[in-house]
Amino acid sequence: MDSKRNILLTPGPATTTETVKMAQIVPDICPREKEFCELMAEIRNDLLKIINADKKKYTTVLFGGSGTAVMESVITSVIDEEKELLILINGAYGDRMRKIAETYSIPFKTLEYESDQSINFTDVNSYLQSNSDIGYIAMVHHETTTGILNSIGSFSELGKKYGHTLILDAISSYAGVPINLEATPIDYLMSTSNKCIQGMPGLAFIIGNKSKLVQLKNWPTRSFYLSLYDQYDYMEKSGQMRFTPPVQVIYALRKAIDEYFKEGGMNRYKRYKKNWQTLRNGLQKLGYEFLLDPKDESHILLTVIEPNNQNFNYSKLHDYLNQRGFTIYPGKINDKNTFRVSNMGAIDHVDIDHFLITLGLAMDEMDIKIED
Image (cartoon, rainbow, N blue to C red; front, side, top):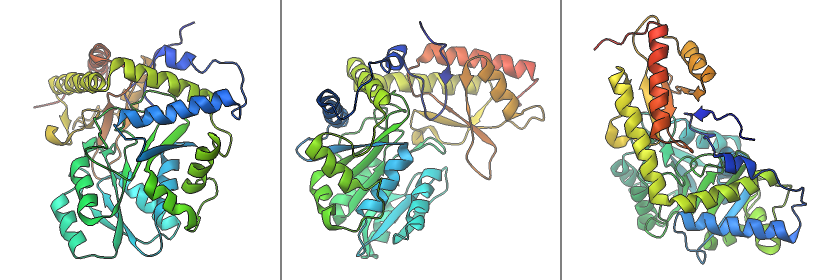
């Protein structure tokens, strides 16, 4: 029986296909069985293929948890005591890396930009030239605070130039925005099962440089459950996760990966981009304005400025849309009234058109008029 289809216009979890949801209905299995270990090995290898990561150079380490779990795993596992971490921040998720470093008393510095500004790599380069204590650099690729896309190419060049270890949050860009680790090497890339790969929440992963991973063996362990080296070593030796994995979510991810390859990576990006263009054009026709310049947008998420109208009420608008099968997301910028609309997931431009029609009806019913 098909389940009710909701259109999640949120930055994750994303709308999934019926087949991905149904893939979770499988016979009970102990995750220590050989059959399940083979399934995880396939998934680990296929996650590399999606971003053209050479399996001789890279491997995938899986964790039960959200994207923040693997963010915490990397930051607490790979930073030694001799060099500092530089965190590039232009949104809430860059700031989350800072909070993790603070929690564990990990030595770090930050370069911070306004949330509507992309990272200025000329500034970063100048900073690195005069700060020899830096050995690690962390950045969010797609900052869903606003939908801004920071340059993975410029970020990768920093690693090549200075020899620093690169940590990339690709949690909401992986499988949605083209990434090629052969062309733009990254040492540790983090993502999760419930965003552009279009699986279910509950599993996150790190694609790591093998030569860097093995160096972690003798480094101090700051976390037990989230120890990256211990998880990597256990998976390499046994094919299993150290602790009980989210079994059904892994079966759903297997199906989601199959559907990704069937669609094709570039075709998925084109679908998302058409969704974004349909959404942007439609919102503009309704009178809405946006936080970002189109050149800085990811084609995955739009930050919409709330209209200056006394009848506009985000909560009422959200509830009206939600009752009709569309979920939007609140803004995350302290000094601006905004809301966010994402177009990732198993949706297309027809779904976006239906959303725009429903939004227009909501505005009429709430008497929301946007003046030019």
